[in-house]
Amino acid sequence: MLCYDLSYSSRMRRLSRTAIAVGLVAALGGPAASQSLPDFDSFMILRANGGGAAAASAEQAANALKDYDVVFLGELHDHIAGHLAEMALLRALHARVPRIALSMEQFERDVQPVVDDYLAGKIGEETLKTKGRAWSNYAEAYRPLVEYAKDHALPVIAANAPESVVRCVAQEGAGFLSTLSPDKRGWAAAELHAEDGPYKKKFLAFLSDDTAHGETRDTETATDAGERSFAAQVTRDDTMAESIANYLRANPGHMVVHVTGAFHVEARLGTIERLKMRAPNLKVALILPALADNPQAPAMTMDKAMRADFAILLRPEPESYVTDEERKTAEAGEALRIRAATSGGCKS
Image 1: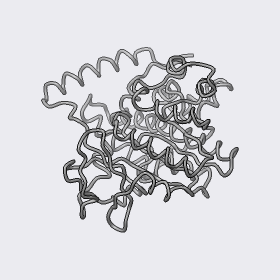
Image 2: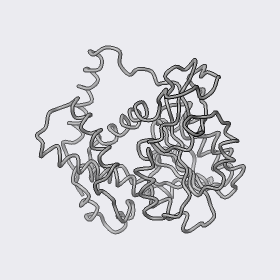
Image 3: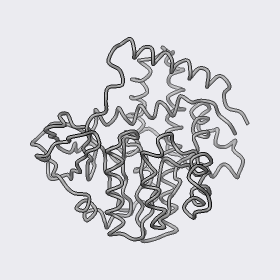
Image 4: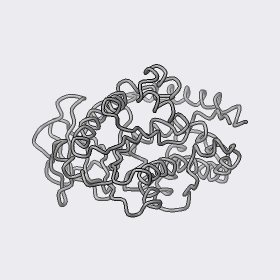
């Protein structure tokens, strides 16, 4: 099965950046710590402390998390300091929990054999990147995690559904999965949870806001497109949740550290709630990124609505555009690429 809709992935990348800026950070109380964020690769780890937040080292965070079954590391995919924090936390957790597995949104189920071959030294990194369809920022963002796993013989779970499948669900709806051949149907979760609820409401609100900046569509078409887009979103969430549950079922007593875009796990919705549907007794921790309003004097509290155990405080990312002209030029170019990419539709 092939699919040519490239719009879904780019929309999700924008979503993961946008949600954190408006969701977790709030200067609601006293400063989290006296130190600053002096440069773009600096970060602070904060732990919920009553109504506020207290600074913690990676080692202190690992001590607090070592008895959990699953630790979710929500991230901004392109923020280098967030990736440095992830590496520090994985290293500290592994020092305390030898039986640990790294689970990744950034690799998809159908390339698990490729990932396994790389970890076993049977193929080189270029083959991993091409046959494993590594993300474009693999070298700077995810190489350290994978290399640490390789050096210490840790499993890496290619947890996500293939993007080609997700794109076709976005175009045709969840029924597309029933058209897959038996050998490919296992690339996505056996059961999807696309019912109404807080996660769906949040997702559709984002789509509504996103659409407001693009072409106008009639209400019925927009509603249908929203349902298909949410089905695509939960294809990812349910597949990642099922991948984690399957690993822990086969390896009781192990810990899984799952790296994923923050939107997938904010407020313990998305992938986390779908994991709990499958394994309600698991002890799950959540770590989310947060952007400091003032990097020289960072001050924030943990927003209870996000329900994170720890936050990784980061400097804000640079503005994508300064003028309306450059923004409109970029949006027009993206619209042209999307129309060209979706003209063929999905086909066998």
